[in-house]
Figure: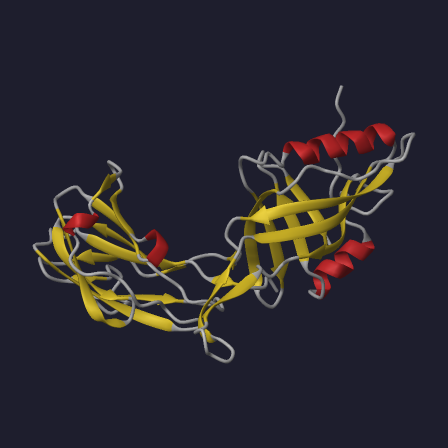
Length: 308
């Protein structure tokens, strides 16, 4: 018979409730590659000896490593700055694995390790009352290398290293109103609340944002360059649903139902980001639409360098 990992204590104790209600503490939760949930810091985290689980003692590497791209002439003093790019994030944690006894502690660690399959990513969630939920997808960076003392103990401390392939923290998307064709040339909000032919999105991150547009044919769409002056034309046939990704290094236009690449049809190129903290209304018009069928909606995923 296998035991049950008790985390957090049920019901939460007085200290846990005080922490949660005060809003002072960050809540940190790991969601493993197997779907398991591990609150490791804050009011939901387990506290020995009442519960079994994992506690976060310290963490570093929350900000992805950056490097400047420069050029220097043979006789140039100093350098000419060109750009700044980020490498993959490397997050190091010190963790304590504990149980009511040695058997329980071993069970806790087995379940924890099962949620760190290095070929897949889990998710480290970070919540504060001020900024809400942010998360980073992580994979195991290296195998556990700690020296364990001979004998067994109900609690062990270990170093744990993880990598974020993308170095930014993300949160819930800003999603525009879905506009549906009211006639052959007008995309309108069926509820009548949003302005026709505009897709509003908000970038609440601290990095430039790049919207994703979901366009349902038929019709020839003309979409604004994320607030820039250019217009991009996307022709779609009846029944086609296009996912338009504007992020420069992942710029694609894919027909969702078939997975076909329809980028060659597109005229123009998205090249303008939505600045950090900005709200924009992206203009979108259409010709040849089918009323009640043709539609458009946009979303923007915010990015931050720091989760709180």
